[in-house]
Image (cartoon, rainbow over all chains, first blue to last red; front, top):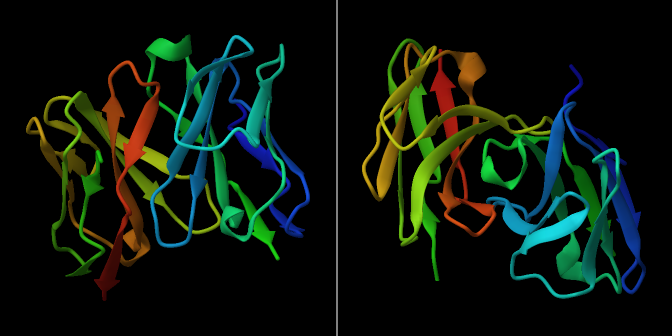
Length: 114
Length: 106
């Protein structure tokens, strides 16, 4: 059984650019959640996707958007990058759809905005 | 603002029991989740639920607004960051604390 994988592992972008982060769910999981973890803080919920639709969103502006594909993999897109977007971005997948909160995390993508 | 609180650091010695306390102010949260995070690796779920439970060397206590993670017979290899999270009912997310760094002296 393959766990949650994310790509790339590290990324450096310039303020104002756009970035796409990718996540492959654990086998059999059809719900994906994205979290932002700033240095020294716990993960903050960005949004969740279930059956290719957004299924809940945290306090993040619309320039944070996502997609989920038929194979349950997912993308996080961030437009107009700001310095404060520098963080570790974690993807987590869950089995059985939105009713299950047993979330399994990937190792994250470290984004640095300069 | 709903928040989850846990100590920033806990120090221990090998073989001891480490206790990490967590409490929250989230009115509609019932389940606790405890994650272990080694830098550069995926956070790993240790134990979860809305009642006291045990998984190997990890025990979880439970009260409506607080939980403790107990690590039995702690080892140097257990030195890591431990996160407490609560499930927010009908809100499709986990709310995390800022993490507790556990250090273990040989």
